[in-house]
Length: 216
Image (cartoon, rainbow, N blue to C red; front, side):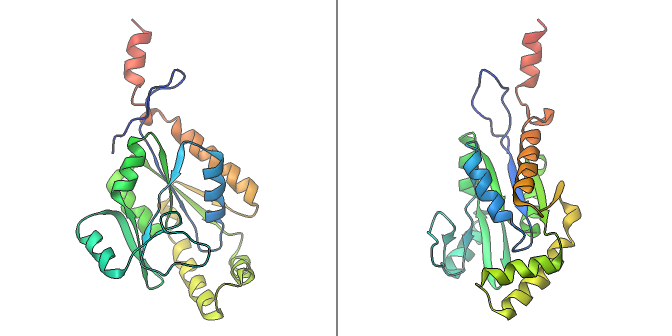
């Protein structure tokens, strides 16, 4: 995925980035993702397709692309997803065309996906993927956050906690890990990672040409 950003008088051309945030449900990745998008005009959210029902306050095409199971299976069979997975009896997938269009437009793409999706993306795009895992301060604190949401039954919360333990066990498949015991501090940490990854020499596709001109 060697997509280039437009020329800029103060920067070199570079490849677009697939920036992944993962965490157990309730650990705060969606809040941090929203803060990043509001703060950074060069970052766009990847909108997943899902077979789950739309919830109150959600908008098709903004929060998710809501599709039925038949359509999801058709998209998967036609290789229209970069990654997809089963999560809580539903399917979620990243539409390939949307991501490639964002990269071609000079945007970095933000993903709010689980470890399975992160692994699949890395297998496809390798060094263009940056993976950040966000831990809760503790598992009791995570349960407390889920209960305070008051959106799930006790059985659903138990299932989320069981899944959380599995997700945490995959932390070593990520490039960076942060503990979200303070949302603002965690947000600043994620911003720092994003800024540093944008400056990596390996992403500066215009570097060789610049050096040649500089040393003539």
